[in-house]
Image (cartoon, rainbow, N blue to C red):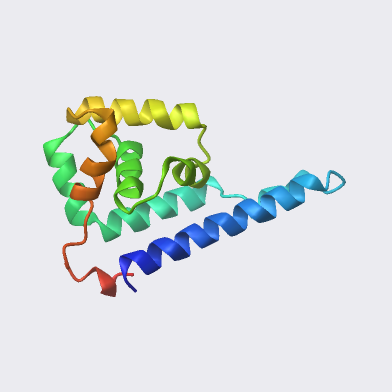
Length: 138
């Protein structure tokens, strides 16, 4: 499976969960437990991080060495930016407010020493497959 196909599959899963969550939320007579069954849980986020860190292990290791102040959340956001997700998709996936993501982006930019407007380009350059046999991991 190639990166674009994998990214599209991930986005489809996110959109499906959002749609189901919205549908459940509209039916106020349903219990909150029904809604919570369709939303991402903390364990899902950990698994997403683990999957991305496995896929991009070389790039993550490089970033950790070059920028030791980056946190795991910083690296996860960089991975998601690097595979081409936009801010709304990242907010949805990480269950994060827009303001929180914008602040996180500013912190990442400060920690790596680039302008926050260039962060997407930096991530795309750093988080690339470079034909490292990733297809077998996906």
